[in-house]
Every structure is written in C-alpha cells, then in structure tokens.
Length: 143
Image 1 (cartoon, rainbow, N blue to C red):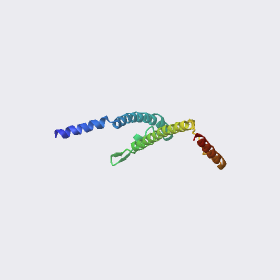
Image 2 (cartoon, rainbow, N blue to C red; image 1 turned 30 degrees about the horizontal axis):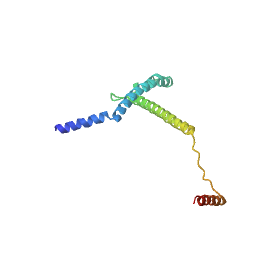
Image 3 (cartoon, helix red, strand yellow; image 1 turned 60 degrees about the horizontal axis):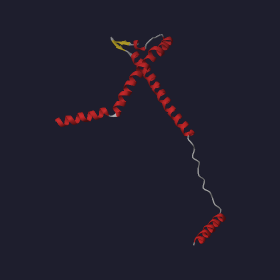
Image 4 (cartoon, rainbow, N blue to C red; image 1 turned 90 degrees about the horizontal axis):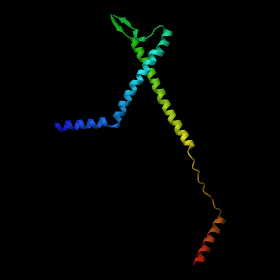
C-alpha cells in the first residue's frame, strides 16, 4: 500500500511540474483577467447602449412568475450576450495574432535572398568533341 501511495504522489508531482500544467495555469489566470475585462465591456459599455434602445439597464432583472416560481430568463439572456462577446473577442485576438505571424513569415520569406536556379548549360556537340581532342592531346604529351 505504501509503495502505491509513493508511486501515485510521484506521478502527481511529475504531472504538476510538467510544462503543460504550468501553461494551463497561466492560461487560466489570463482567462480570468480577460473575463473581468469582457464583463466590464458588457456591463459598462454595451449594456448602457442596449438600455438606451430597450429601456432596460440589465437583462438579469427580467423574469416570469409562474405559480409563485420565478423564471429568470433575463439572466440567461445576459449570459448569452456575455458569451457572444467573449467568443468574438477571443476570436478577434487569436485572428490578430495568427495574421501577424503569417505577415511576419511572409515578410521574412520575401526579404530572404533568393537562390538563383542553376540552369543546366547545354554544350554543343562540336565543343564536346574539341574538348575530348584537347584532353587526349594533353594525355599524349604526358606519356
């Protein structure tokens, strides 16, 4: 039993200290901060604009009362609005990063010195024959 416990905690320690879990933790913290920014965008900018059109400052107060039960459909609408804005913001941020990377790769590729293609030179037959004769004459002089 003791060995299984040691093995379990050793495996857990390896899992926690891997780079992936650290990256996940950083992403979670950044995501929470991003959520705060989006919530502020929704509550402080978008919803006042919606309120000027609909007369409601916030959807969360909208509800139906059915047999003394409150169905808070406004909170659901508010959550949908926040989700759509978060999804759009993440999409825009990721698209911006990807396009920037593609642009930098394209600039790097275009600015890299281009290798000239080596064209195969076609030697006419008479030049080949003269070259062979010359080489044979050189060999005869050496002997």
